[in-house]
Amino acid sequence: MKKFLKILFKVLISIVIIAILVQGILLVPSPQKDLRMNQLRKNITYSDVPTLLINGYGGSNYTYNKMINYYQKQNIAQKTMTIHVTPTGKVHVTGSVKNKKNALIQLLFDWNLSPTYDPQVKWLKSVLKVLHNQYGINELNVVGHSWGGTEFLHALGQYKWIQRNIAFNKVILLGVPVNEAANNHVTYAEAKRRNITDAEYLELKHEYQELNPVKKIKFYNVMADYKDNTDTSVPNVQSEFLMSILNPEWSSCMTKKIRGIKHSALHQNVNVLKYVAHLLY
Image 1 (cartoon, helix red, strand yellow):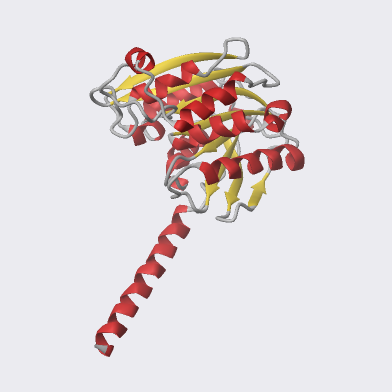
Image 2 (tube, rainbow, N blue to C red):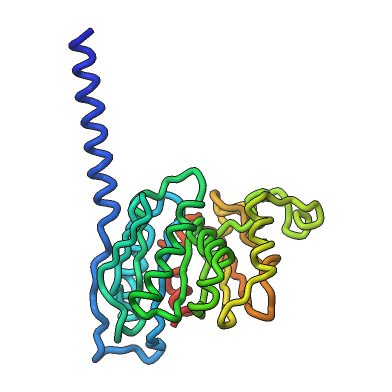
């Protein structure tokens, strides 16, 4: 029995070590490559407004590695800052966006497997405050995949300080659930008529009734329809509920549905990467 317990202990220790190593690898930031200023593209607008990349549930460096590498290779944008948030909510920043055109900010939550997105909402509030107070960022674009976009919507709605101090020019949501009570067997119109909602959506809707951003926000709601109005992870109808919380007085919204791809392809498919670049730049 003692021999068995020793073997079991060694196996468990090995599993823990492997898990830590894998987690460490997944949190290695994407490589940074500066824009080639002598090769700027005529079809790209180079701006001082940085773009914050927010992962979804279980997201890691894998989420935006391809996007970052593609944009740097094509001389569209450059990753100049990495933000790590520890499981206790401490924000660690490396790099800068000062005097950097089309800067990309890679946000990595060191623990991104919570049963709810509430911790990430809280951490994201801290990240935005650090970016404004310590790095002078008053304007941002945002790209949020899956729960990453949901977290941003809640952080914006809950925190008046963010609304007053940071202008969000463009917010691109990739497969982002807004109302998770609806499934792909009902249309958006039917779900609204039947009042199919959950507590998080009702909270979000209430928050956005009082939203007062410093600048009008352009939302781009990008969905994937692999089959039967779902990307296999997020039914399109859940994303379509974005329209029900927005007010045309302080926002505009463009919806795009891309057929034949799954949820993860929204940050991996080259055609989607090109489309996102077109929206941003």
